[in-house]
Image (cartoon, rainbow, N blue to C red; front, side, top):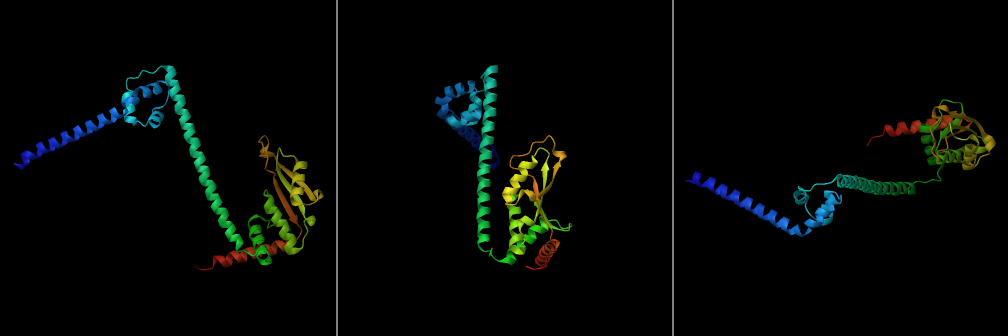
Length: 257
C-alpha cells in the first residue's frame, strides 16, 4: 500500500514544485514588465544585453526571452558589436587601473619596510659601509682586471661607489677614469656631459666610448644614458672587497637557524 501511494505523492510534489516555479517566473516577469518597452528600445539602439540588464536591473534570462523575436538590421548589429567592444575595453581599462592601484599599494608597503630596516642601521659606521660596498662589488664590479672598477646605468649606484671610494680609502673621483658604453643612436658628447655633471667629475677624465652597432635603427629611451664604467687603478682595493664579500657570504651560509 505504501508503494502505491509514493508515486502519487512524488507526482504531487513535482507538480507543486513546477507550479511554484511557474508562479515565481510569472511574478518575476510581471515585476519587470513595465520596463519591457524601454529594454526593447535600448536593444534596437545597439545596447549590449549585459548593459541593459545592469542599467535596468533585469535578469539576463528575462531579457533573452523578450529579445527572441527582435529582427535587427545590419546597422543595429554593427552598433551592438561596437558597444560590446567598447564595454570590453572599458572593463580592461578598469582592470588595469585596479591592478595598478594594488601594485602601488604593495610598493608603498615595501618602501615602508625598507625604511624600517634603514632606521636600524648605523650608516656612519665604516665597517657597515665597506660591507655594503663589498657586496655591491661582488655582483657588479670587475674582478678579473688589474684595477677596481664598476659599471652601471644607474646613477645612484655609481654615486655610491664614488662616495665609498673616497670615504673609505681616500681616493678622489678625479683620480678615476670613466668609460661609456652606449647604444648606436646616442650622442657621445651629450652623454659625457650628463655623466660628468651627475658624478661631479671633470669631463677630461672620460676616456674611450664604445657604440653598440647591434642597436642601430632601434630608438633609445630618453632616460637611458648608457653604461658608465668608473675605474680606479687600485687593484689592492678590488682584492680587499672581493675577500670581504666572499668571507661574509661564506660565514652566513654556514650559520644554522
